[in-house]
Amino acid sequence: MRLLHHFPLSPYSRKVRLVLAEKRLPFEVLTERVWERREEYLRLNPAGTVPTLVEDSGLIVPDSGVICEYLDEAYPDTPLMGRTLAQRVEVRRLAAWFDTVFGQDVTRPLYGEKLFKRLAGRGNPDAALLRAGYANLRGHMEYLGWLAETRRCLAGSDLSLADFAAAAHISVLDFAGDIDWPKYPAAKEWYVRIKSRPSFRGLLADRVAGITPPSYYAELDF
Amino acid sequence: MRLLHHFPLSPYSRKVRLVLAEKRLPFEVLTERVWERREEYLRLNPAGTVPTLVEDSGLIVPDSGVICEYLDEAYPDTPLMGRTLAQRVEVRRLAAWFDTVFGQDVTRPLYGEKLFKRLAGRGNPDAALLRAGYANLRGHMEYLGWLAETRRCLAGSDLSLADFAAAAHISVLDFAGDIDWPKYPAAKEWYVRIKSRPSFRGLLADRVAGITPPSYYAELDF
Image 1 (tube, rainbow over the protein chains, first blue to last red):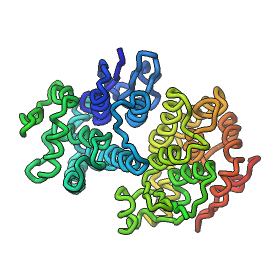
Image 2 (image 1 turned 90 degrees about the horizontal axis):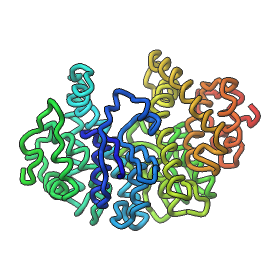
Image 3 (image 1 turned 120 degrees about the vertical axis):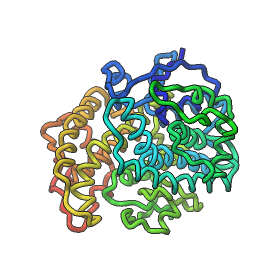
């Protein structure tokens, strides 16, 4: 069976779980505690990051961006990268924006300081980083809201990797109770739609020892 | 004419210049001083990073990773992403490894502290970051040497984006005189081959006000 080495709250792992589920590709998961830097895992993926996908054929596919490109080429039935060249640019641009800019400005300081440090036993959150993360969150949620207001899906009229990359980051922040939803009605309307998809069920069922998400985390009419 | 908004010493800009030249696609360049965060540029690329490609058709393609995927789809004559699914995974894995792991561990601390700070008028290098960058450089150059020793090109037998992503980072470090070549004979042999390609000429001709590269920077038999 196809195996995904992942970490339940990693937004990059979550993006790949969503893409696999959207493409109806069955897979098992194995939790990798990346901070332990297991040698056996580093042989699969020298970068040491999650996720890494191992296909039944033995093909090892590390890096969430590489995995998503691979899955769309190997299993093109539910295309998630757009059709025309211009659409594909916009899908990839937004997926990269969430994984780099949003990730660095928001997910890394908030998830990194509040959840990851606790899980990895790395001490207390840095208050300055948390403040920076919350300040960046507001501006970036407004950009997300603007996209959600002006387009049916984030990269245009069709669901794409851009929606799943964005939803993966948002879902991690939501697990930590960090999103003040009443402030972002357009982003919320978009997130309700994505969250209601069957591919999202696995993410909503995630429970992590010692951390309780807010009650609305798994609700579809939060 | 196709226009690339770039910064001459940015490894991400250099990677795209190499790919455009390998594909024999004519282009003009315009230097963008990203630290000024020009509004007009942020409209082209909200992430504010270089490079951004603007096609004759008006299509705007930001983000070096997105640009390289776009160029290989739009101009497939000189394919740089590999042929089989497994080859494409390896090309993308290595290109991502150089742009993220190598970039964060080595290029950002060394180029960022020594050159970028000077160019952007942001003060003196942080000695601790420089030490970390040099320490990481050794391990990562050994990985590059191992790849160069066991394969004809970095991702296999054919030249690919992996070679150009790697050479772009190496070329920036080499401009700063940071690579002690006698220590890395296999990596050097690979770099001489890449550096000798016509696509590299533009990079070797780059001169940046106030910074003099070592004499061997532009030599092919250094």
